[in-house]
Length: 133
Image (cartoon, rainbow, N blue to C red; front, side):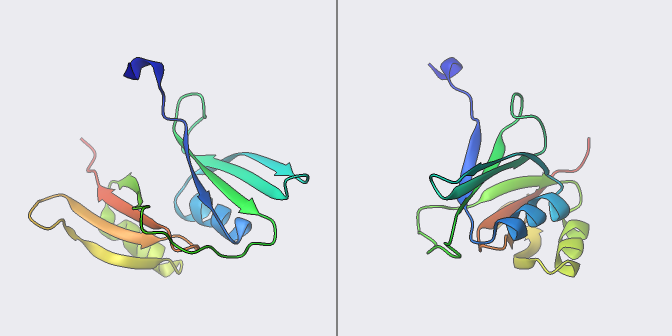
């Protein structure tokens, strides 16, 4: 049955659209792929990602006009991104003002090196070190 499905995107509601777009594009290297204003619904959608939506899973940032913050629920965990050098990446992000929620280091009871950062709305993003082969 899984051959009938493909993972298209994850949606996050954001309180400051431009700050979020800047975070994901300038700091995490994604590209803004498309933007849709929906005046009748009073919201804006911005899709960002590392490649074209036809071949890559992307992130949908939804800004509901006039809503500047959301309560973080307890069900959502985090997004995960692979990086080649987690220590250098965290230093660059820290220098740019990004909150490092968990410093880089091995995962408990394992050898995988991870860190957690937060986007402007407080969503957690796990960075997983993936050395080039």
